[in-house]
Each structure stands twice: as structure tokens, then as C-alpha cells.
Image 1 (cartoon, rainbow, N blue to C red):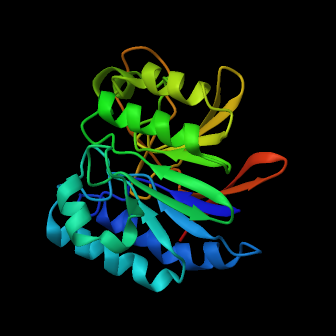
Image 2: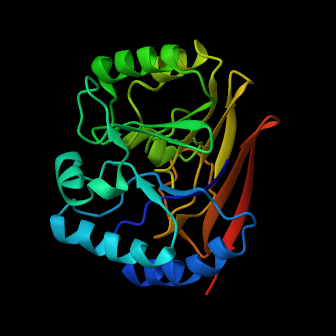
Image 3: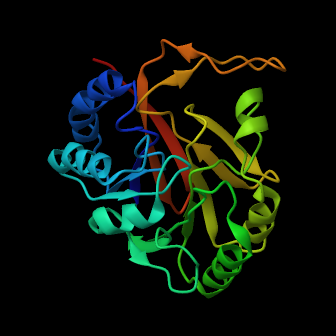
Length: 249
């Protein structure tokens, strides 16, 4: 399976000009991948205010790309409005998960599970549903959500906008060897690590803006001149491998 992955477009924000540059570069970047990606995944903060109009603008931006798109809810999104406005960009609704923005989708022999971390917490109901779904899975699984379930090292992000039950999510994932990777966004940078040295966990850079790489304690997030980026994940019998493609003007 080949999966393109970007994040945090924040449609309707003060960064819409930069977003336009990224989207202008996306078609060529996607077209250059051979074989072409099975899907394009956007891991949340799709809009800046979660309004119907912003979701419609996002749909219009994605329509010309010529690839099936799936999206997740982030902390700037409204899960109910997202499901109402963009059902074609979500997978099958997950009965019992407790959110209209949780979904499942199978492509290329891989099960993708889209979680809803828009509140900053997954919650027991969603985690119990995930535990059961993973236990029943007979194919490789990619678990996807907005918030990274690991410390990023960006002090303000980790302190002010964390996933509050990240440890509980990691415990669920660790129980199920069928999970081939965890994909996320939120930190606006490409960060890769491993769960207990085993399961890859990868965040995608933002399409809107990127923070500078300042890992000193107490430092606020500040903008970086780095270009937007697209990740391309390859999942096969060798496991998950990730390539980074710059989206330059």
C-alpha cells in the first residue's frame, strides 16, 4: 500500500496564502509518486474554525487532486459538522465509538482506523472500541489520529495542547501486533519515533505553517521558513517506510 499523508491545512486561517502555495504544488508531488498513492490522508485541523463554509472550501481544494482523500478531526474541527459536510472524505462510520468522526476504511489490503482526538482526549468509549476493533482485525492496521501520542519536544505544544490519554492509547496499540504504524499531525512538523522501540509513529508537516525546531524548555512556537511537505508511506511485507517530499512553489 502507498499512502500520501499531509496535515493541518487550517482552512480559513491567516495562513491561507501559504496553504494555496502548498496545494498548488500537491498535484505534481502526487503525480511524481510511482506507483501512485492509494490514498491521501489529512490528519486533522482541516479548518481553523470548524464552519460549514470552511469544510466546503477544503472539499473544493481537494477535488482536483485525482486521488481518494480521507480526513480526520483535529482540535480546530467540529466532528459533527465535518461528518455532515464531508461524508465523502470520511471512511465508514464506527458504531459504538462515540463520535461521528471515527471511521474505518480498507485499501490495498490495509485497514485504516481514523480516531477523533478533537477534544484533546480520546476517552474510554473510543479506546474500548479501538481495542475491540484491533482484536478482530485480520489485516495490517494503520491507526490514525490528529494528536501525536508521544512528546514532541516542542515545549509549548506538549504543555498546552497534548493528547491527555496518550499513555492509554499506546497501551491499546501495544497489545495488538497487527498495528503496523500510528500516523498523526498536530505538531506541524515531520517527527518520527517508535512505540517502545517497535511500532512506528509518524507525524506529518502542516500544509499551513511550520514551527521552527526549537527544543529548549519554555520556548514558544515560532514560524519557520521551511516549505510545506508531503509524506509518502509504503507499507508492505517489510513494514512501514516513510519518504518526505517538499512542497515548494
